[in-house]
Image (cartoon, rainbow, N blue to C red; front, side):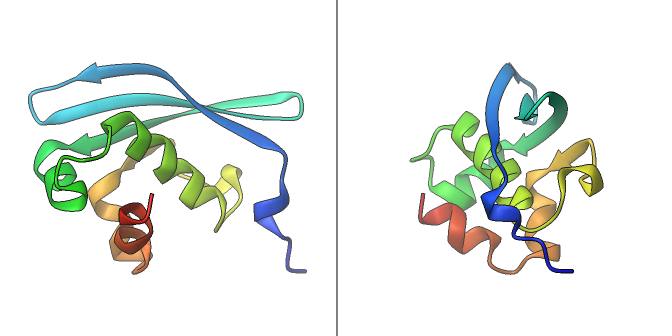
Length: 101
């Protein structure tokens, strides 16, 4: 059974942002119907520069990363901690899509 993940009614929001020595750490809340889940997204400053040339807000990249993953797999299968620079290892189109934001 192939479920169309892009049609699920969910919202994705940044509920906490913290600058770290390496970059940023975000808590992203995904609300779907009556269920809410939170994910930690780590964004390395050097990778952010490479990915966006410093032109996109780190919080937008973190939120878009979770949205990108939700379009490809159910949220129940996502790791609770996501490191942005590792996503392209599983999804070759990730960097291209982030540049198109």
